[in-house]
Image (tube, rainbow, N blue to C red; front, side, top):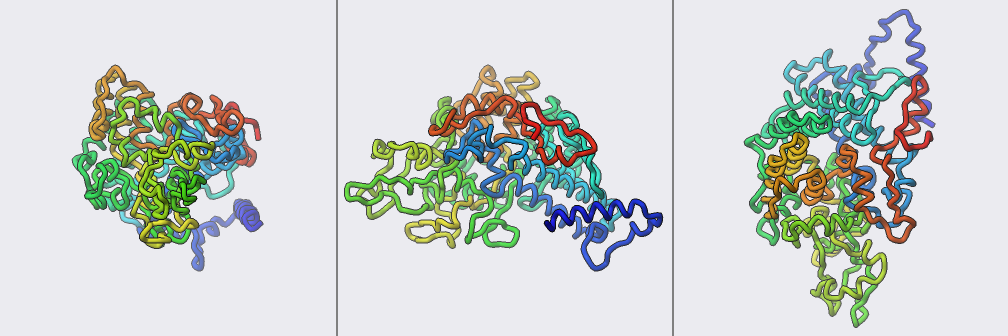
Length: 568
């Protein structure tokens, strides 16, 4: 009720003021409470506003077990194995509606970012900020606005474009075309890439010109401006401060593993530790204000909780009647505190590796396919699940949730915060609060830039250069190299799965290419215990629906719904 009263009050104030003949009233600056008039004045004010954009973007793309994971559930990457048809894309027809949370949340979150950026840009000119700092703040705000418009275009197609601070209710929005939205994103990102500092001049997690160039390259691909995309991606790739990591490094470099495994170990994502591959990394700290993650509850990126299996749920006992797995999540290759909800497709788990099973990214360190019994009291202790496979593959839950191949990058074996260990010796985790992926998270990584440029080369008709870029990534993985004749968009999409996996916001990639329906209907098996396996994706799902609430409140013009969706 308070929220409704607030909006009505603001509307009434706007109406009353519009009829007042003394315009000076409108220029009054409140002195005893924060307002836009007194909150956007100094460099510190604008820096705080930009930090809010970081926070909103991280929330949309990385935090929590719901909305960021909308981008991997129900794709060629994986599906909801928990038999939840009306959420997490267990069923498209039940989940993706004009009134559903995914459609509403992403729309509103990106427009919050756009609104915040517009306020910054509108207030910047009349502020006390130095000219030099104005250039920086403008570039930062335009990167976030460009990112938001890019993602809206990927998800919804054409959307309304708003470039001014909205100071009164507006109900006559109309949709621009998808191409126009991409062009607006390009306009913003061109300014950002030209004016943001270089990657060696920013702190860990801070946006640089290379982050802007990477996003710009993807927008150019979406506009089929192939040569511009090649050039923008080339700025990132050719920068002397960036390179793929090819040697062991970081916090566990002396432990068994490989360089791809090192990329995702805790503390290893940032330039300050020698990682020259991270272009933009979301920062997380445990029990630190603003650090998001906590030792007392679930917060932050929760890929461990969703993608890791739950072998502790097996009901099988050894001949003495003892459970071979400890009863809680464990910080080793049993997956931490996983609940086995995001089950990878067979294409992700097996199909993409048929090209080269010895690919480093499919090694025993990176794609966990077997697990040792970890209960010291069991006579099977030290044996592997594969040694007793027939007994552990009896029920549907055994295969779908209790154990399946999963990516090691979603968890931090042996590196969970000390506060989360119920038993520090056995490394059993406190079940009520563990489940977060306790590491900084890549938003942009150089390997993806190579694959993005390969896509641009392919679009331009240069298959050999596309193969060359793909092979840079594959060579690091010590994988079989590809020939120019083998390159097509599906190979690039498979290579993105091999290299990025659950790290990628897969839906954004598939939607921008119009491949969501094709690849999901082909590769996503879905939950075997429900009608049609819950995989009822339709061609029109290549775009999200426009939220009905936005259509309904837009009384001054028609906000046209995407084809295939009901009016409400």
